[in-house]
Image 1 (tube, one colour):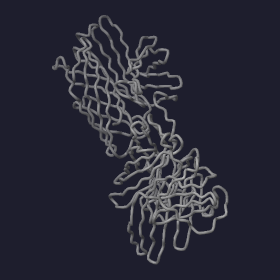
Image 2: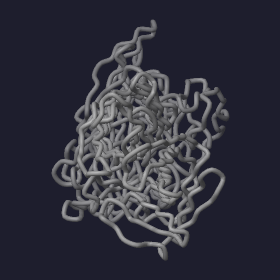
Image 3: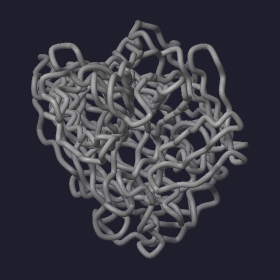
Image 4: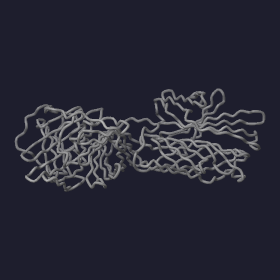
Length: 589
């Protein structure tokens, strides 16, 4: 796609640097590439045909007018309508001497209207208005129309995203737009720019009240002459009303140079009455502000929002819009594909007398080469441990206690898969789980108890680069001392600083003696560690206890992994040490 030229110097949406032309999937590496040169010539396509303009000048509708709701979507032909919208704006004065003064930054009361009689769009606030006809189109591509209207010393430019059923920035029920209004006089230019989303909102009665909605989103933003564009994800929990957004944005300079995956746009909001929501956003390193939007389409099919804030280090406004489309993102419970990503595993082989008393010995191992594979189309699992592959599926199912679904294969090996969904009494998971593989053999008077814990699930593709998050969860495993064998349960907590990738946490185990069923609280294990991409590593107990894991879900909503090492003292005989292995899972608070 090509680029257009605008008076980006006075706007926080530097369309001249990026437009929608610099958009595309985020790449890696943070290198510099150059976008194509501006498209030459002046194409004159006409959305909805080529009508005859209506004489009579430019109407100035009253801002805040009542939307008419005349259209079912944004595809042509459109009926005349004043659309529901959310808008932000800013203005500046640029003097001929080079002076630059910000005049105002605001969430705006704006109207966006379409007239079917001449296929015109009119955008207005209490300060200014602009009317745009098909003959005013100076550029278009698959994602956008760009209109320009010049009247004496006043220039108005409107960018509208095109309607569509697939692809970036092209949506059926919601549109994104920017409107620049510039007035030139003998001493300089006064200019304003607004970003807004508009369209066909979701009826309040049709808004889901339970479950989650997952959206692929596009973001266009700018501060002065630098633009940002990218794609990401948004998640709505309709039950709690919480929304989370994350999108890695490319940084586009005024000369067209692009720094890919420059930083993450992160926002959190809450649903209000009806289909609207409000919240806040942050963008590395010093930009924060407010975000407002709503859901669009008959069944909350799409999402649109605008945001406005200030760069604390430079004191200049930063704003833009978000548009997105709901996706049928599967959870582990209904996943129909193949999970084949790397998993951490922990193993502990325990040898003890059949009575559970007397001499006990064990070994432990942490290995990233062991895997848990899952084929959702057949509900078959494969576990690769120590170079050997073990399979199990529905024909091996023997029952569930709500926490674990248990499978036993023809060799008597047990596989306990941690249950996801609201039916688990310990914790409700959506994306993460683990397999507890266990076999017990008799060697004379000794039981050989072999345990392997392997986490798996729908792993996150990326983690945020800014902000913080806390996770609460559960742990499960096996621990041994020289005298006893214990089953481990307990709670976990993690705090991750995504900006500096530091991690702290705590494990709070409870050890139940297999010999007599007595349970003992074990001293908490404090953890410190780091985040590398979506992988976590931490340690505790003077580096004798190790934790490995990963983030799961579209936005890192869950965490799962394994642990190995020194748990603490044997709670029955505090003079000897206890070592353990197991798995943990958690959800973002």
